[in-house]
Image 1: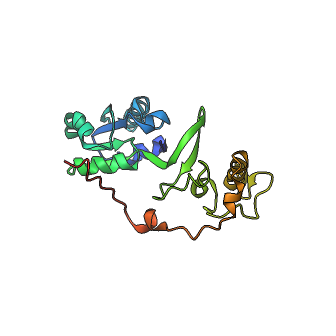
Image 2: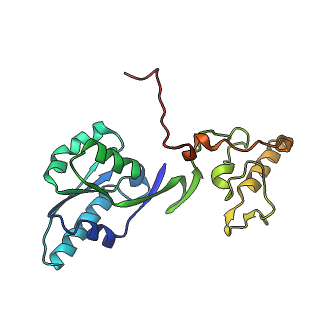
Length: 222
């Protein structure tokens, strides 16, 4: 899932200060799961904007709404009436959803209400861990399901480095060494010898380093 965190409410309030009609638009997918931008957070942000503007003597018409998914045009249509009534939209979706809003409603300004952070998973209530960088060339089959690109602080393809101690990364004692985890897993499945093969430098052209990426599935195109 895409993990994000809501921007400070003071920042959101300042961003819409000059507008009289504000729509706070949540997304029902990833940001709802990570409690950054679902219906509850949309209502909280709308309420905070309304209270702040009343205190400032500049009342505002602010509404909160959530669509099922902001990253697809078809779901954004369900909010058209609310969007067209507003002067500005605060999107609580990830960066993909915000940009999709600005593409679909080209004449409407949609501002970000969250900071999109990474792709990861919840490891416990209130804790999320990054485990995929979307590098475009997955090597999880070679490392038995632990990503050396996301889980190693140096994104090394041959590891571990000399900095890890007691299974922890030199970057932080709180961070598990990704390559330590890989070695343990290779030992568990009796595949440690596979790590003796030196991997060539990673081809980063499939990652963001190669520019904005695009995927085309000819078999499902209409």
